[in-house]
Amino acid sequence: MSTQFDAVVIGAGFGGMGAAIQLRRLGYDNLLIVDRESDLGGTWHVNRYPGLAVDIPSATYSYSFEPNPNWSRLFAPGAELKRYATHVADKYDLRRHMRFDTAVTGAVWNEERAHWAVSFDGGDQVTAKYLLAATGFLSQPKTPDIEGIDSFAGKIIHTTAWDDDYDLTGKRAAVIGTGATGVQLIPEVAKKVSELTVYQRTPIWVSPKVDFTVPKAVRRLYAALPFTQRIARLAGTAFLELLMVTGVLHYRQMPLANKLGERLCRRHLARQVPDRELRRKLLPDYSFGCKRPTVSNEYYPTFTKDHVHLETTSISHVDAKGIVTEDGDRRDIDVLLLATGFDLWQVNFPAIEIIGRDGRDLGKWWRDNRFQAYEGITVPRFPNLLSLNSPYSYSGLSYFTTIESQMKHMDRLFTSMKRRGADVFEVTERANDEFLARMTEKVGDSIFALGECGTARSYYFNQHGEAVLLRPTSTVNAFREASRFPVEDYAYA
Ligand code: NAP
Image (cartoon, rainbow, N blue to C red; front, side, top):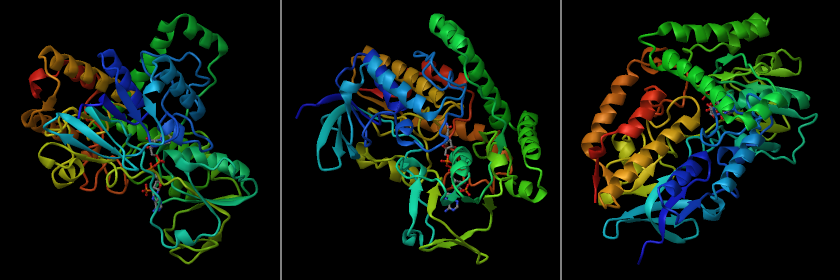
């Protein structure tokens, strides 16, 4: 049985497309990019809820090598991100590699043939020299395990499965969830419904959103002189980097930056919500940065409207007509909107079953040991696997920083492998152990170790209370290591 593909890339979002572009640059053209969805774009294909927008400046939240001069706003609406993804796929000729509505069930390394066997829902199987898992961090929607939710007779919509045909006008609605998604959704829903009750378990830190329409003249300038947009990108990246490094990662050395962030959010809340009791409910009791903060100018004022209610008593159960809280109060509703986020640590990491050398099951190994991956991308005993959504892989605030540093890692790794006339790579145990020890030590300087994060319920922490999602270094460091890591950190064959 010969190997069918150079590589299988799982996921046709920005991560998978970036990896595929890099593989093409490295000379691998026989690619299969599979996605369980019906089209490309990942998050930006799946999410279509009202209010969806990027919350990182768009010039930064895009590939550096494919600037888009047409962003309509500083923070572009979701539909523009989807259009941008389509543009990238077409321009880089990726579509011909893509197969949609194809869910991967598992992948097994075949030691003898030195390739991956990748199985699909329905029983089909393909083989590939390299496997790239680009399934995203936020791709397994979480439906809350609330008693009686299945008995609700009205409409239930999760934000990742928005029903465009359902008209919210005049309805009695409830939203569960006040993360970044809830913050975008709630003001839009409030504009349409007759009653809205928001069930908040944990408040979120919200700072002002400095957003504006990008003037046509500026867009023309970006198109005519792309370096001007690169400057805008650099400014956005530098600002985010400063925020992340000083406010979150180096809390031990610079606690002031974090305090400033918190003060900015407190002042925003105080300015927008005059009612003391409402303000108290909306104010987080955990340190700024423990959980991903967000930006909005509309979120807080929404709660001051007469038809919007903030409920902070825990939900007891749901019945056919509505929601009952622990204190016995009930609200009858027509529609229940779930902005309840994603399951990262139980069903992700990895999103599919991956069996490497000696029968090692990646998910089981991560859970029985610690969550770990060398440079957030490779794992010992998983030859020729790039696990792009691994522990310690998320670097910086814009996901594109992660994508592009991983593209650089691929470049160095594949070039070094080819130079040796090899076609198999595997990270050494030693390199992986050293990286894990280094990251563990660095997390010790961050807000995650030193702040009051106990009540944050943040997905940055795994089930053992370890903050292993984000790479606890600057993105400058991530990029430097991606293009200079010791090539002996890998074994080649
Ligand atoms: P999230 O941050 O995980 O928030 C989920 C919300 O649902 C939380 O408030 C959570 O409360 C609540 N929840 C979950 N289960 C619940 C239950 N059983 N009972 C009551 N409440 C429950 O998810 P998200 O808001 O979808 O955001 C996830 C990430 O997506 C963001 O952090 C961000 O990285 C990304 N995002 C980005 C953008 C963008 O503009 N680029 C927009 C939206 C989202 P607890 O906190 O108490 O668990």
